[in-house]
Length: 420
Image (cartoon, rainbow, N blue to C red):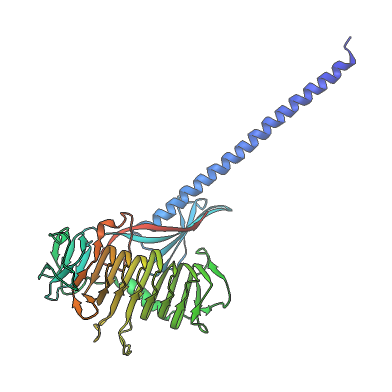
């Protein structure tokens, strides 16, 4: 005859078995749930990468138009792509979704450099030689006038560089610099007058930010000429009809500015693309991080007495593109002035004159019509004095804009902006 305690033992053992079985069932359920979640996430990642690859292909995508693409001829695997012009570059936006699950990325698109066209220096041929003095260094291929290159003695400085003058091949230049990209120029010129969607710039805000997954925010500085103590970030285009002063207390990050003139305060630090009609002045000791751009696009019919100019203050570090475009040759040449001890990493491309102070360093490339060096007593044309031009110091991963003629055909991701 069984003892009464045996029944309790059976109940306890049954309860333990039930708990173990329930745990196994729950573990299997959650494992399957996580497996399905991971599988869906990996599938979304693959679809997102497919959408990015489509954006970087040779397939043309219209600006500011959203396109839904079914990857495998079914609605389950789809991506949405969009592209907008962003200064001298493009912004790509890709969303991959399966039912309610979505992954998205925004990124800046640029192009590789055509190595066949890449030179450290392109100086147009005006039947005058290029003269070098002091500790001038030229490393990379050059295109210079047929008159060649020679050593010179200026301001008590004799040439102390390499006897070959150029560490690279020397080619003859043409009488005009290679042409700018027409489509990108047209986009920039149209953008100067495209203010119909602009709202007033918020006064007193400490941070103005707009995601690239939202529509571009256009703002116009109607009632202010000085911006101070403000952070402006991402998908924002700022306009000004007059001179806009940007103090060093501001922090700009991946924004675009169109104005008549722009002045950056001494010691400014940030990342932006700024385009002006009359002038751009950068205070000394400023830092512009890659990929920044400073561009001057004078109006062909402007009647101001002073020539358009870009003036980069001394001891400034700039990473990106500095350019000046002139549709018609002006009576007084446009001047781009690079101050003493400037360090430019990227490209300087000027339809006009480049004025170089002492100890300018360009890690990349410079193209212009003429050099100007001014001492306390005299001016010298096509003289490089204590100037370092070193294309080999530029990163192999440097990408450029289709605005410049050295651009290759392959589109690449210049910078990841936002995403999950």
